[in-house]
Every structure is written in structure tokens, then in C-alpha cells.
Length: 303
Ligand code: ATP
Ligand code: ZN
Figure 1: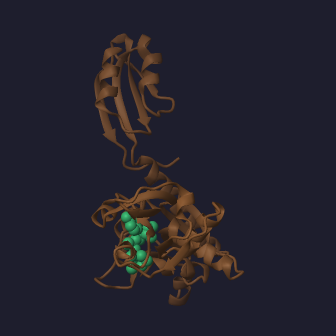
Figure 2: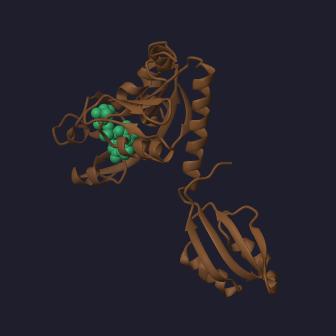
Figure 3: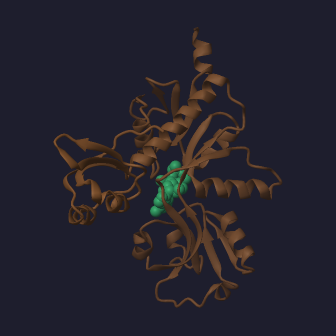
């Protein structure tokens, strides 16, 4: 295959260059088996064992890069894609990227917050106030849906200090632990959007080989997300205790029952639990007769 064809068959995935989504995005890809060559400060990481390269960019640019088909895929916050959708809609345009899958990282919420000392008397009390945000479209939709007339102060950053500077009465910003709010003497009062990272894709139909890799990547992501909390549990138990044991195993499908050589009424039980197995569970299993219990982490899973 010559170099041009080779390049055309490679998928390009946009990932945040330096920020909260960078490490978890790269970790997800690594867990999906991708080995990336990336020199320091390089814009492009080349997949060494998959036809997939990673372009490192600002997160705000990811929806455009994907819908303009510069990149085939992108990992970005729901907050960014929803703001983008509304911004496009306001211009009479339609977002052309598609969300393929919600991911279990980048959890945060877009929230309204006000000075900690000020009591909050419900949405009605927001009327006429100034709210500073870098998410004017999501905020506007939130206010409109609740018929609240407030003034939106659009900022490009440093939203949390706007009330102190007298530029706004409240803010609408991303929060995860709340520590930034606390440090700025602000208190969360309403949630505008619950957010997490999302895998998005181009509107363009991909060549079969690339599409195939998108599907493989999705299946691997599925597997990675499933095993996160999953445990493999092995134990011995009296055959008569099986009904109780099945009820105690958290989130497990049909366990494998194996007879034990020389003890006709005892069996070995092997099961995948889709939730963590806590000491309390093991103690309860012991009470119904289980012994020789072993809990192992699951590394990979493919349905
Ligand atoms: P960039 O330079 O790429 O534009 P940024 O300052 O916009 O960076 P970050 O603060 O790194 O971006 O946040 C990236 C994304 O991480 C957010 O859009 C959001 O989806 C998610 N996120 C998770 N928790 C938080 C949080 N506490 N504050 C802000 N973003 C968060
Ligand atoms: Zn950004």
C-alpha cells in the first residue's frame, strides 16, 4: 500500500491537548489497546498498533474539527457539544457531529452559584440579576425554559471572580467537587446541565475499513467501561446454599457451578460481578456457608 492510501485509511481522533480530559482520554485509549507514539508537545500522536492517530487540540475546537471532518472522532465534554448545538441552532444551522457514546469520565455539572452569604429564594428571585458565564447558550435555554428574565454576562474565562469584581451577581460555571466555588465564597444553587465526556463522530460516511475500526473501538470502550467495577469471584459452597448465594452476588449473571471432587454436596461457584464486591458481601456469603472465597479484578471483557 502506498503512503497516501495508508494515510486515508487511518482514523483521526481529537483529544484535549492539556486539561482535565487529557489524562482520562489517553487512559481510555490505552486500555482499548492503543499504543501511541507522542513526543513532548507534539500535535499528533501516531497509533503504532492500530490505524488510529490522535490529534491534540483545545477542547472547544473538537466539535468543529469533527463536524468539518478534519477529524473522524472526538472525545469532548457534553457541556461543550450541547453549547455548540445551541450556538449553531441560534444561527439557523444544525450540528453535524453525532454522539456515539457517553463515557465514564469528565463528570461535572454546569451550575448556577451565588455569593455564599446570600440566601437563595428560588428561581423567581433570579429576575433582573446579572449572571456571568462562558456558556451563554445553555444558560439562556435554562432561563427561558423556566421563564426567568435575567441578564447574561458573557465572559471568556475567570467567571468565578466576576461577582467579586462587581461584574455580575451570580455565575453559571462548571463544578465538580465544589472546591473552586468554596474558595471564591460561592454557593451552588441550581444545576443547569449534568455533564460527562462523550465520543463524537463525523457526519461523513467512512470507508468500510475505517467504519470497522470505529465499531471495534466502540466494543473495546464498552468492555473497558464494563470491567471498571467488575470482579471475578470464586468460592466453595454447599449445593443447598446456591439459591441464597446467587442472590448475594452483586450484579452477576448466571454463575458457573463446578462439582468438587470427593465432596458430592459441595460445589465451586465462579461468577463475574458487575459491581464491586465488598467485605460485607463476603461476610454474608460466609454466613450462608461459602468458603475459600477469592475476588479478582477483571482486566478485559468482550461480549
Ligand atoms: P482548553 O484549553 O482545552 O480550552 P479548558 O480550560 O476549556 O481547556 P478544562 O478546564 O480542562 O478545559 O475542562 C475540560 C472539560 O473537562 C470541561 O469542558 C468539562 O467537560 C470537564 N470537566 C470536568 N470537571 C470539571 C470542572 N470541575 N471544571 C471544569 N471542567 C470540568
Ligand atoms: Zn476549553
